[in-house]
Length: 227
Ligand SMILES: Nc1ncnc2c1ncn2[C@@H]1O[C@H](COP(=O)(O)OP(=O)(O)OP(=O)(O)O)[C@@H](O)[C@H]1O
Ligand SMILES: [Mg+2]
Image (cartoon, rainbow, N blue to C red; front, top):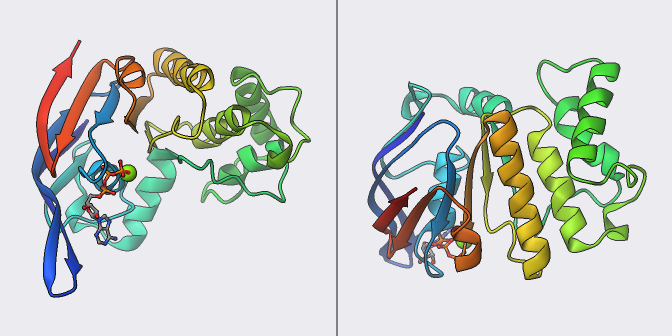
């Protein structure tokens, strides 16, 4: 469902260009639970931002569900992103002035096809139960632990029922017990809803939980493991 072909990304650095990706090709299937592993600077964030249509490649193609995204306008890319892709960030990125409930509801409120209030409530409450925070709806993010905040962020990423969730180092700010709990939650949703997850990590215990591991090194795929 996601095919990337000969992806290059170059950034200007003074008079020179730095190649963050050097011809990466990759196929990800629907329902995959994919880990992107590799040392700092190997291109993990760059590759995931391009797959997530947040960033564009210098060269190469990204095909999502048969759609070649290279030819699309900004507006069309935004629509695919809003309808099909959820994001989870290392630093949670919750809005501090909103409650847990409001943070999770937000993508539905700003969606083009905005569901009605009752439908929104049902989905938000279902997900907050799923992530084990049904009793924290009215709390502010600052009143939660890091692991709890990341679980709110996962609920928010899932609220629009995206086909793909991209998570850049979702466990980097968590201790290992909370990191594994967040991964278990992602895995459960992957199993139950068939959502494709793509997450990056430096932690071997975390990448071992994937069924498809992509090892990046210096902007290239060094190896892949499927299981
Ligand atoms: N906006 C940018 N401008 C210039 N160079 C960049 C930019 N973003 C990334 N790079 C360079 O591209 C390379 C890959 O960076 P990237 O952030 O993708 O690595 P990463 O694998 O995610 O690293 P980390 O594990 O530290 O998050 C690095 O050499 C980085 O310095
Ligand atoms: Mg990164």
